[in-house]
Each structure stands twice: as C-alpha cells, then as structure tokens.
Amino acid sequence: MNRDELHGKARVLEGNFKQVTADVTNNPRLHDEGVADEVAGRAQDAVGLVRRKVGEALEEAGQAIKK
Image (cartoon, rainbow, N blue to C red; front, side, top):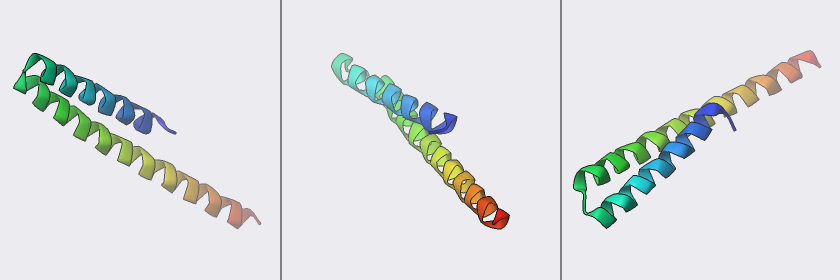
C-alpha cells in the first residue's frame, strides 16, 4: 500500500464520519462536504492503486530483462 492509497482511505473515512455527523445534526452542508471528501478519497485511492500496479509491472519487466 502506498501513500496515495493510505491517504485516500483516510479521506473516505473522514467523509463517512462527516456524513453521519451531518445526519445526526441535520446539517446538509456538512453532509455534502462529507460526500465530496468520500468521492475525492476514492479517487485518490484508485490513483494509488494504479501507481502501485504500474510499479509492480515495471519491476517484473525489469526482473525479466535481467534474466
């Protein structure tokens, strides 16, 4: 897991927490902010996953070339 994946997952959790808090306090602005944070976190997590997979593929290609 890389930094982007970790920060993305943390942002998703933060967004979910904001949404729950907004539902309890009946605050639509906070709910919208939580949804935005959740979406941004999922995107950041996806970018991190792609970066990790590309890195793994390049590493495997490098190992194959060495042989």
